[in-house]
Amino acid sequence: MADAAVAAVDWGTTRMRVWLLDAGGAVLAERRSDEGLLSVADAGGFEAVLERHLDELGAAKDLPVITCGMVGARQGWIEAPYVTLPAKIDAVLSGAIKVPGIWRDVRIVPGAALKLQMRPDVMRGEETQLAGAAAKFADGSALVCLPGTHSKWALVRDGVLTDFSTWMTGELFSVIAAHSILSRSVAKDTSVDPESEAFATWVGRALASPQDITTKLFKIRAGGLLFGMGEEDSTAALSGLLMGAEIASAKRQYGVGDVLLVASGPLALLYGMALSIAGYTVTRIDADQAVRAGLFAAAQRNFLEPAKASA
Amino acid sequence: MADAAVAAVDWGTTRMRVWLLDAGGAVLAERRSDEGLLSVADAGGFEAVLERHLDELGAAKDLPVITCGMVGARQGWIEAPYVTLPAKIDAVLSGAIKVPGIWRDVRIVPGAALKLQMRPDVMRGEETQLAGAAAKFADGSALVCLPGTHSKWALVRDGVLTDFSTWMTGELFSVIAAHSILSRSVAKDTSVDPESEAFATWVGRALASPQDITTKLFKIRAGGLLFGMGEEDSTAALSGLLMGAEIASAKRQYGVGDVLLVASGPLALLYGMALSIAGYTVTRIDADQAVRAGLFAAAQRNFLEPAKASA
Image 1: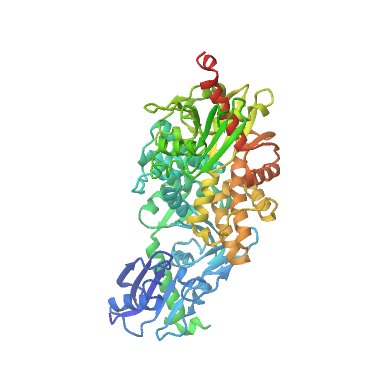
Image 2: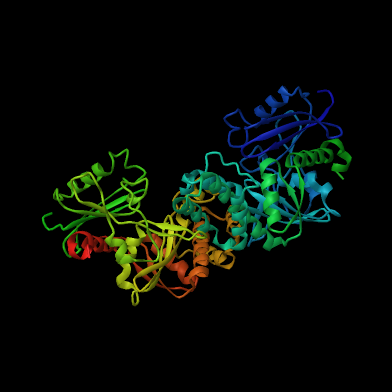
């Protein structure tokens, strides 16, 4: 991998992805693993895990590494303190923290924090996705939806991240499906068909009365007991209800109109459908591509254009 | 226990309670155990568990038993089919189902169901608590709040159960505290001081914008990371947020005014506080006393006044 200019690593709570990129940001090689924060200690620690993957990819010993995500959390490799809003996205990327005490040059992009007493919020990784999606912003401004375990909605104005908020949609889906009474109602395979009528119906119900989510959850169980609602529809209902609740709440906070959806795979299709039902006009960008582009932009600011980075 | 007229058993998902009652309904003896539905198979099955407890209490071999709760669910001892609303509470109690194929006369009070396609709902056990609380109803009518794992609000008019709805408040608290990112924020001991400022603050926040619950949950985590909110306050916040969400939603459905709160212990104090904040005038009745009174009323209708029961 003589052409590699940098390794880009998206390192989250449950998984990591490593790409070797050339000087133009093109992907030369890729690895994915489940060695996220939760299992990295058992796998030998951050440095050992990273070096193993770089070795497998044939990376040079002096290849610099740019990384983002929970790797920079207090319980991560080293803490990359949050940049406080409002913050220029470019400035966040430029402030990557160097991991001390190791031979390789590894830098971690900081997260961003909204330090409002009434609605504090934090992100790690999404700031990099936002940077990677910036090419799609109209005049440097956009309302961006980044769904996932902890879904984020972010407001960017002229390249400045001015506001964001987190909904626990994905995590609530997982813990309710696995650990609550609804575990008896939903399917083992929790994948949901975005075209299913049950999904659209329950998105609509959440949008119609988002203040009733904790009672509507139980209606999924009761619908199975009294009306024979099946596992597949119950799973779609749970997914639709929680996504609808997120979108209704975000809509109230940020208004309705154009939204840039940063998502991959099935989630992109489900959110695309749910956002359309709620009246949004959706432009989609692939989440993997966005984080890679953001990491490459961060690498340029931190390694590849050192003069600019220190300016 | 020669004076015992009946054994009353409240048999739920996670626990059971057995009382020996005399002909006037007074308690002669009591036992509590964790042999609820989830563990009864491992403990030898329903009959063996029941007989062991009755034996410990010195109950006669021919003492009749009245029971209510999840014991009558499809996955319980035998299914006691739901009575469909609207239903006279007296009539629900009179329709207890006899367990077949055993020597002792054991009868299970049926649950109640709201068979509405748009908001189906079910209860098992609460119908018996409602019967036991009936002495406190004004002219046989009341709005009743029965908090718990699956909190119920019920509307009774002239002794007829006309409507009810379930909020998954208690179960959401448990699964979120144990299995989500908030497990890192809340205390191991999840008891909450009803007088705590954090509890009242978060009840108020939920009442102010109940459509934002799934984002406010994450603010508890972020409040810890950015403003040092401690474990005790985070636990109180989670509790207040979910109870406030329930009450805001119930208020929209049933209106505000007098409410009869059927609850015991810490939950009674927390709901008493939260309901007051929401503007309700609360009359409290102990949940244990209510279920016992309801079971005794059911026993009278099924065993002690057989002529009336078959009328």
